[in-house]
Length: 299
Length: 267
Ligand SMILES: Cc1ncc(COP(=O)(O)O)c(C=O)c1O
Image (cartoon, rainbow over all chains, first blue to last red; front, side, top):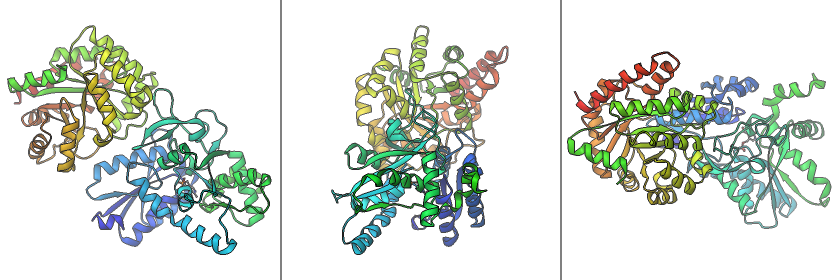
């Protein structure tokens, strides 16, 4: 709708897991806009379901073969397209990152999550939750949940990044644990990089968390100590994926499974009456193909 | 006076336009890059634009992206680029500016960078992804070190912003001849002359034009309207094609002589 208002006839997006690409393609189909989605070719392999969805919705999915062939490189290509075609193209950035005002636009849209969650929990439990948990890729689902609670000082908040295979450079995407101050894609934040300022490669079992930087507002919330950031490994996330499916009857996205992994770590040490609110940012349907590789016992 | 400002002032007096070739430092290696800088100086280059390789160059097309990758694979870093400038300065006083993304400068530390770059003999810096309204500290430190701060202007830049770019830029303003990333284009943007005149008027600075200029004909046409012409991808591609060949350096010299003549004589 922003694109429409600005008189732009084409939208572009980047996507990691494909969720944002599908969302953009859906909106474009409904509004009659041309739509191109950039996606790392490695991510395309593991998210074929979403690639198919986007194409079915009339979008072009453009594989990105440069660099690590994941989200960071898809954003590079989308930015290059945008500066070339800005006269008729709007860039729908999929997370709370990128140059201002993108982080703000995305946060304001996503903050519906927290507003609704806050109202619902007050209605059902008559009190605020003790802790909020969400996974952090770029950070949009997390900021969306946290934002409405920031003024509630008694509510603790935890953002969970991708610990990948361990905190060795190139094997994870835990920007707070392994990164330093830097600028990528137009935002100053924590960035995984080497001492020369070259951006580091990343790994995560979940494409949506596999990114070398994190939304700048999270960097701020980290530095002022309002939100605590931690990480869950690939293995812990897969365990949580399994457990949540079995115990709750909900197959979570592998991204969201990182937040659940943190719940599994923390809940036993907390008061049994404590309320933990976890953001289930997506469904795991898109991830079953990826999960089958790692959980062969269910094949 | 800063070498870039001095050279542009001299050219203006003579009614001439600056020839500004771009090459990626460290592609294929530093010894070759330095050899090519000396060659460009002899061919009449007025300002050398020396690229600092970066892993994620969002403002660049494939030719310069790949050059940066090659340089990084060879182990290039900001420290090495500054050492290379120091070696260049032992043999040449050609005006030289760095073309860099912000992150390698941040990682080096802006203050240390300004000091070491000035000491190495850098005359100007174009930081591609630093907007002029976020550049206060950067500009203060580079000004104090006597290094020109060059900012980009694009065809879509508004009047208000052009004025700001003019205030923040020293040496010259770099005008992107058309929307998009670096790379060779078959035709020049129509209305380029009017656009350049507008940028000159609103920034009050000399205006050099780059992005998409690759042939001597295009260069001569742009030379007739701007204070300088930047040629990047065409040279980077040529260096890549010729550097491994015996006699390749001569081919680069022929190219540079032709380009220099086209710009300085503005056919
Ligand atoms: C289901 C799901 N959750 C979370 C994320 C991570 O993004 P963000 O941190 O911006 O919420 C993604 C990204 O693709 C996703 O698909």
